[in-house]
Image (cartoon, rainbow, N blue to C red; front, side, top):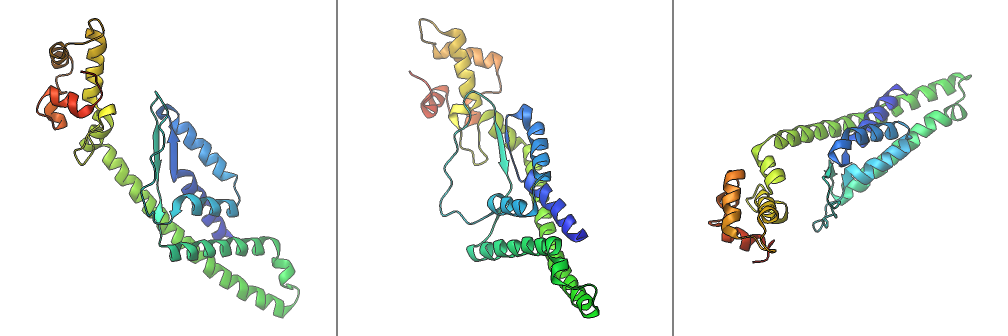
Length: 241
C-alpha cells in the first residue's frame, strides 16, 4: 500500500504538470489549481487522465493549429510521450490492471483471504508479494517517465533562455529562418509608424523608414532576410500600397 501511495503521488505530479495553458499573468495560479484538482482525483481517474493526455499515438498528419485568443497574450505547452499503437494498447491495459489490483487490495483483500487460518495467511502473503512486484514495476516505469518529462522541461527552459527563442517570440523569426509576418517585430514597427505618421489615410514609406531607424534601430530588413523595406512590405502582405 505504501508503494501504491508513492505511485499515486508521482502520478498526480505528472498529470498536474504535463500541460499548462493560459495568459502569462495567471500561469502560476492555473498551475496551482491543476495541482489541487489532481490531488482530489482517484487512481483510476488519474490513470485515465495520463493515458488521454501524456501518452499518445503517432499522428498520421499534423494537428490543426488551434485558434489563439484574440488580442491577448497566451502561453500553452504540453509534454507527451508517443507510443506505437501496440505498445499504447499494452500500456493502457497494464495500467487498468494496476487500478483493478489497487481496488482489490483496498476493498476485497479480507474477503479473499481467511487471515484466521494458517493456509489463508500463507496464500495472502504470496499474493501480497506478487502484488508488490507488480506495483513496484509500475512505479519504476512511471519514475522513468517522470525523469523524461523533467529532462524535456529542462531542455524547454534552456531553449526559452536562448536567442532563438527570443527571436521567435519577440520578433516572429522561427528557428528555421522563416518569418511569421503578422506577429513579427518589423511588421509591428511599420504598423506603429503607419498610425503615427498617417497623412489622409496613407503613410509615406520614406517617413516610416526614417522614424523606425530612429526609434527601433535594431529592426532592419536584413534581420528578416530581406534586402529592402519594399521587400518587407511585399513579403509580409500586411499592408496596402
